[in-house]
Image (spheres, rainbow, N blue to C red):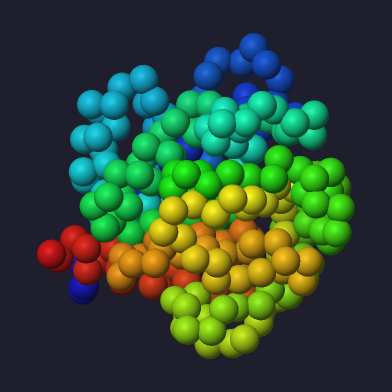
Amino acid sequence: MSYRPTIGIPTQTLHAIDGIPEGLPSSWVMNQRYYYAATESGAVPWMVPLLHDDLDTLRCIYQRLDGLLIAGGVDIDPASYGEAPHPKLGNIDPARDAVELTLTRWAIADGKPVLGLCRGHQIINVAQGGSLFQDLEALVPESIKHDYFPTAGFARDHLAHDVTLAPGTRLAGIFEAPSIAVNSMHHQGVDRLGKGLVVTARAPDGTVEAVELDDPAFVVGVQWHPETLETRDPRTVRLFDELIAASRAFAGR
């Protein structure tokens, strides 16, 4: 049996989630689908606590990881990229921001593989000095609908629109297609592109739907939620397979 790399998946603060009342005891949680997707591709998933105020312990956790999977979730605090909050900004989770940005920066510096999904795609961009449109509808009038949220009655695997993949990129090699249909559960998007990143997919309105690091290291972010599609699309499985293969190779150095 080949080595099963350990993939860290940071958690989120329970009360940051829509519909969860304030005043509950603090808890760290995360959707199970991310852990199943990583496990099904051969990883050992590790739930990473939000120890934003204990960098020594967080660093010890990081050193035991072979790769990172940064999941979807609430909005990123715009203070992370030097902007004031927009009226359409949703819930934020500053402890999660701090942990994910720190882990992502450490990983990129070390060449450790990173896969970012939806919010995680945006975290990669912010970690590299990029910024976000805090609300696409308000700030990019020509944008199409991107916010097909389950809270509005849409299925998580609802295929909302196609994205065009940039030829010759890692993502195009994984999907082996010029375009793919994706789900869409976000209202923010990449604005200023982070240092060293290249755009690898766009929506019909030009919204950045995927990025990767211009480097041999595996650092890929996609704006959609492949963890809810991989059970029905073998090409999507390859996205997780590539993360696990890259993490296995990193561990074997």
